Length: 325
Image (cartoon, rainbow, N blue to C red; front, top):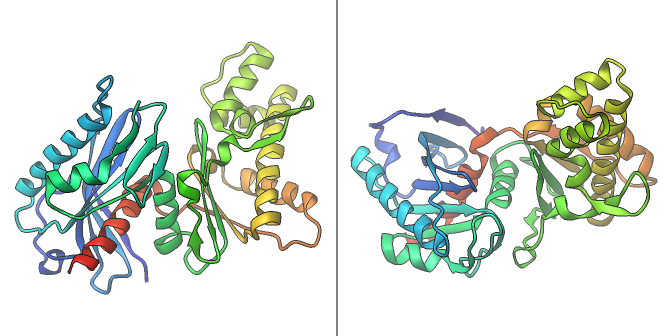
């Protein structure tokens, strides 16, 4: 049985099975902050435990953000080793946003963080003297959901993280589609626009777009997409229109994945997924209308929460640590 426990802020772990190849230090790098935590495998290797999760500001140095991020990773690794002397960190996992070449260990491009073709794996391996698992943040989170979370036992999966923007990961026949680092950018896939033409998915279907479009339509500011959903439930015509446009856009992309890739399971995460049945049922109904003979996908809520990226990062690192043993 897969297990996950999160001991944020816990220091010092004394269990003897914690030491060894199952213990890795995982980093999830974001545009504002970077999350770090110790991840150790369960006794049988079928679960993980996340220990001492911390958040730190992402060091953004113009022209050398890649270097400064790596320097901070090295500093934090030393701090974790000092704080947890009974643990042997056997590998380090790092996930970053943007376009990523996992095999080469290179951050190809990040508009928000400013690097281009930065050699993360080579830089960190040299500095740390440890195996370094490197990958894309949402792809690694999707891998974690596939192996330990909501999509365990499934083979054809679409993971959608719907927040300020929309990010995704795709698995086909039990394998994650990487596409040289370019696969999974579903938020930038084109969908029909309400007034004709085509626009990118996240301009209609993201939580950020829902709030923005309602404010533009009415002149009334809202705190977020959940407010728009509440107003729609109360009969607000503009809110209903904005919400229905979002459902149409999301459903179009899901239906495309079902038709082209054979997607059987849709894992929904991010802030908008917290809307629950009102989102899940609306998507299922609209996608059903768009499909013909295709199998209808199952919709499930992401299971690993905000630590999915850390866990995915750790799984990649643990696989490398095992090869070194």
